[in-house]
Image (tube, rainbow, N blue to C red; front, top):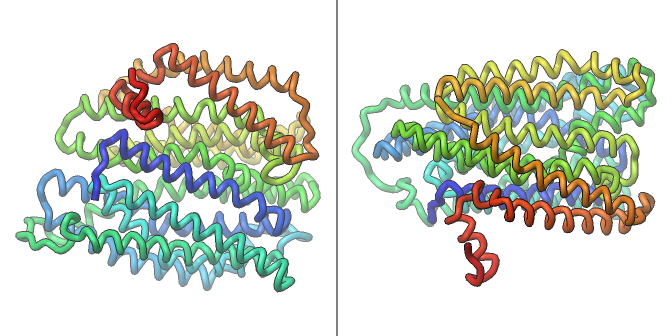
Length: 546
């Protein structure tokens, strides 16, 4: 199995995640059309609940496994490394089984808590059924995650990344094929189609797990799974304790992140119902803010997921060896790559929000408003995930708790007041929930950056200067898009017109951004001359280099 360097690992992981998220963006176009607004709201209810309980059962251990495997590997403790992997799997059996049983038993009370007194849309029984269908995925996805963690701890990024592609392709095939079969062949209801769709998470997870186990079995000696080693002076109890000490911060951060959507959805449903908005608008706005706008944001937030996959093992290695210069360099490079790629995408999606929403879900002025603002949440989530990953890689768990919980509490406290305020001054109230999330994530980022600077002596001056320079190509890109709005006619009643408009703006805007960035030496500064030459040679078949 090929091991990856930091930047190579980042590109492999980011490419795989971006590819799967693009697929995840595109499938919602036919799916949304098949199940309609009410069916899409039902999918959002079940999926948001599933993500929270998935995080409880599996969010921490995979990354903790990656971290502890990398640590023991660096120290040459091969026996402890393998035992840590097997202990992690045993823990996962217990947690996944308990979570699955709880979801099956308490699906109806959870649905009742979510919907409250809302009537005229999805029923509590339908939501409970969808939650039970998606709960089966808890039985397989956590094991898949732990196995990926073992590979990532060895800096083997390509196998786990390819398994993500398999998982997404199979899941989308079940969602679209199952929904079409239920609605157009069997004349079933959108509720049944949604239940089949969410059950697809179990089948797709199983397919990816089979692939990744097959690859590991082919390379078991290289991964030290079949080799015999002298027992290290570390007990199973110590390994278990270390696993939990590493996992708990990841569990907290992921659960809190998932709870952003759950709290927003719950408070949106109740507040908009209190404001006497009709049920269709309430369900549309709640699902758009928490699920359908974030689906489009996936192409942005996936960048940080790929970054974290490669960043954590690299920073753990540097931290274990007390190489603080390397820690500083890697963290700043991660931030620069992240912002360089995600900033223009964020601004572009915001400017083109009406056309993009029309392409995915059909024209809706509220949907355009939600996406235009919500996409900035995606940018902040990127930075938040990267700073949190750095804190966890450096064992700054207390700061992780403080920054994450403070941001979440701020969001929860501001949700209702901002919605009521926006409604009073004539702004759609659901945008208040989006604004609260932006403030919450922003506060978490500030706390994390201050801690890293104070406790780990990380310096951001270079990154700050690079980011300031990025505003030049970004501004010119914005001017190109605004000019095209003036000269290019657009018909929001035609998806083809919107696709052409987005494509032309995207291509010309991207050309402007990258050409100006190249001329200003921003690209070379961010990626480094060596890696930039590698990329150019691969793209031009060795004909161009700098």
